[in-house]
Image (tube, rainbow, N blue to C red; front, side, top):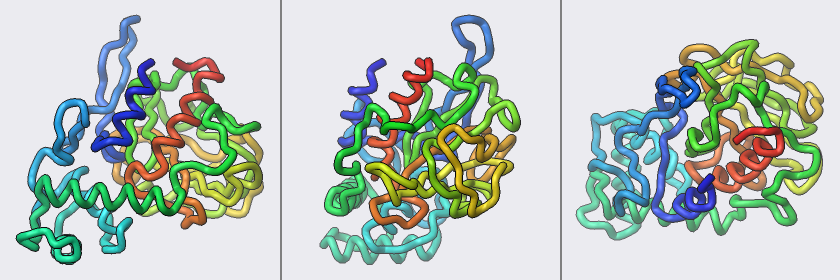
Length: 292
């Protein structure tokens, strides 16, 4: 399915549409209407450009690329809310970053050089903190883990998934609610419900055992949650439904599934810090369950 090429690109200067990406209808070969993520303005792929963003970011602008910028600034120590709007706080953080990196002029504009420098800093942070994978973990799918969405037959093909902080996965015909159930990927405890930007019912599962013990799996854009905080759950147990409509920063129903950095916090990692490794796990679980 070409996922090796996808992962190779992801570890280069590559970004794909984040959680706010629209899921728009597209015809399937069998005639049934399918939905797939649309390219998000401001993000480019490594295969088509060496630039990180397709435009210079500055105060007053908004979009998925601005949200990614904000996430990256926070990752490297210049904390700013990930709102998707480039305001005064973001501008000040950009100036501090550019000053520290001796980027001239040290102003509030983020062009190609500043964006590439920031991306490199994010990758260095991710590698040095060990967030990419867990020692002894198998990307074929840890023992006892299951794919997070049911029914698998209604999940969009893997080539329609996208990555940012986690993996965005949609359902055929924007299926949501009771027809699109999110299940615990493994045994653990629901420690939180509701994540800023991901909706008020998004569950967070703390993994109980195995190579990922103590890590947190988050389920973005869920509504409603089906179990309360504090519940001990087992692999395959329903914990939420895919939210219908816009739940959190989202244009259509879908699940964003992601895993925390080593040592937490519960949510959320920076864009593409842990999602490439998590993608490989989820993809293999999907194929084991009969998906393509």
